[in-house]
Image 1 (cartoon, rainbow, N blue to C red):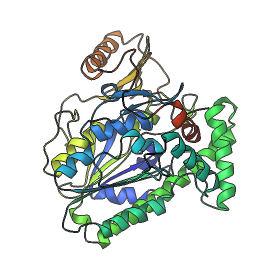
Image 2: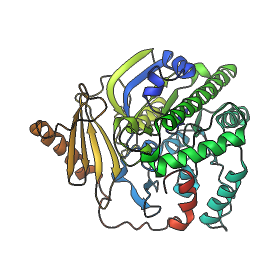
Image 3: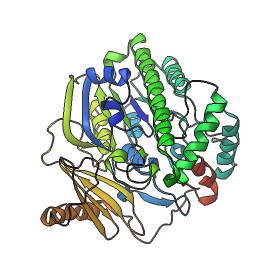
Image 4: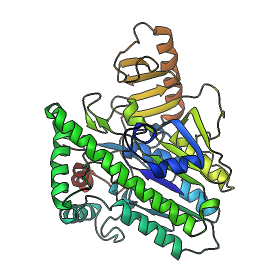
Length: 428
């Protein structure tokens, strides 16, 4: 089972900022990876990479609008596809339209619901489906399907499936994604207050006061605590059905979230720690209680689940799998822009190298964990070594980096997605 939480920072699961007993309980049943990194700082880069075990630069590049980019799942092998071929029943449930069938995420699933209205009616264009979702969102108490209801949907599917077959269930919780909504008081009032302040933070970050920033962080913590309770209910539901001891549970996030640390809010196209470091817990059969400090990446999840199911790992999967000590001098590659200029990073145990177009930065995370002091000027040899590491990565993975941005046979264009992207905070 795979559980992903949108926009969940690692330091809010592993640190003292928030109480997360369900994550802690999972951690006690398996391996906790404290240095896990997403391949992108936003959903449309990170989640395709997780599902295909490929870096964004090796997938098909898309421009959803003038300001929003992503990569697309075409015919690549995916985690659910590999497991379905192995005889698993597969199901995926969430409420993020950027992870819907319009973007290829239904591939490999027997049951799939992204809560996108009219998604199964091929006679309607994608724009009509997105706009219908936007209209419904205006009258809902919550911008997304609440984690409690999503959990119920997943547990109901477990009750209805063929009990003799192994299963793969994916749930993607959206509550932690902005606009954050306080859980105390009147829901509609909280929704309005949350959307207004979050919109200000995304569009006018310099205007956010210290008090407003603390309010955003408080609501963010409330959403994490709420989602954690729902994760606990999901795990307890597995236990009640006699499935927990035989189920491998992977809990992670697609990316983190920024609260002004580097001048922005939400999850902009940057590769700083607060955006790309994510929680990652693998609990279940054969997984002893262990803290792992190795550098790992979300592309490692696909090979891990494939091997756990007894399936052959597709040749296209580039991840190594999540076995402690599996490789020496491991690094994590993250990418935030592909064209016309490239933004990417190389993360080692101690150092972070960042390339933004022609600009380079290097941070010593031992002495500067907040990434505030660029030391590339005095650590020139190390900077060159990591730059070469990124060049080598691009020479292998970057098949679609270049001027050709067209996508054949994909029913996506600016008009179809712009309204929903604005709701999600990707457009101003």
